[in-house]
Length: 318
Image 1 (cartoon, rainbow, N blue to C red):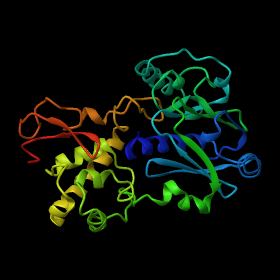
Image 2: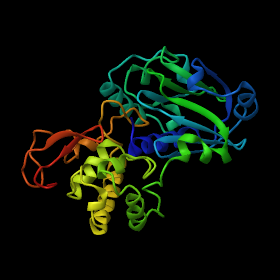
Image 3: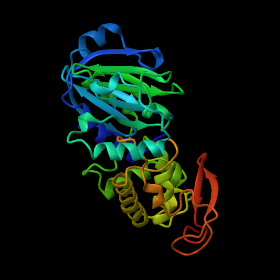
Image 4: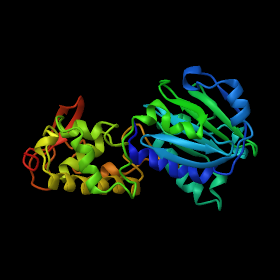
C-alpha cells in the first residue's frame, strides 16, 4: 500500500493536470469500487469542475465545483492515468515500467504543456502505458475537452466515493485518521502527545496506527526509527520525550526527502509521470538486510514487528 510520500507525489502530479477541467461523463464496471447512486452522479459529478486535488493520509480528495468531492483510495494495485484527448483513441505500445519512465521523460521534454502528455500514477504494469480502458479499468472520468482520467485496479480493493465536501471529514475512513505529519501545525509537542496515546504499544505499531498519525507506513517507520536510534519493539512508555522529539525530527526529514525523490522504488508505486520513485536508493535500513549499517558497520537484520517485515541495526538500535 502506498504511504504518505507516494500519495503526495501522485496528488502533486494530478493537481497540475485535472484542476479546472469539467467532467462530461463517468462510467464504472465494479459497483463496490464506485459505491455511488446514479442520481448523485448525475446531479453532482456530471458537469462539475475540478477545483482542487488534496491528500488526507493515504487517500486523495478531489474537490468539485458542486460542493461535492471525490474520495479515492488506491489500496494495493490502484492506478490513476490521465490521457489527453489526442492520445485517447491511439493504442500505445506496451512497455516495461522502466522503458515507460524513459519514454515519459523524453516525451515531456518535447512539449511545452504537460496537458499534451499522458501521465500515469500507481501500480506499474502495462496499464500505465497501454491502451485504455483495459480489463483492469474500474472507473473512467471523461472531461469536456475529451481528456480522460482512468482509475484502474487489478485486485479490486480500491474505491472511488462521491460525497458532499462537508461530509468528507465524517467518512469512516477519514474520520479515524490522526493528524497530518507534514502540516505546519504539527509540531514536535503534538507528536509527543499523539505517541503518548499509544503508550502501552510497541513504538513501530504506534507509528503504523493511522489513528495516531496519518500516512506513515512500513518504509518510513523503519527509516525514522533507525535514524532516531530507537528499536521498533520498544514500548512507547519506555521512550523519553526527548527521544520522541528526535524521532519526530527524523520522521519529518525522511518523509520530505522521500517526496523530494518521488516516493519509494517499491515494486508497486511510481509517480504521476510514470517514473519510479528513488527514495529507497537513499534508504539506510529498509530492505538492506544482510548489508552493513551505514552508521556503525553492523549487519542489518530483518524480523517481524507489528505484523510487518522490519529492518533494524542490532548495534545502533540496541
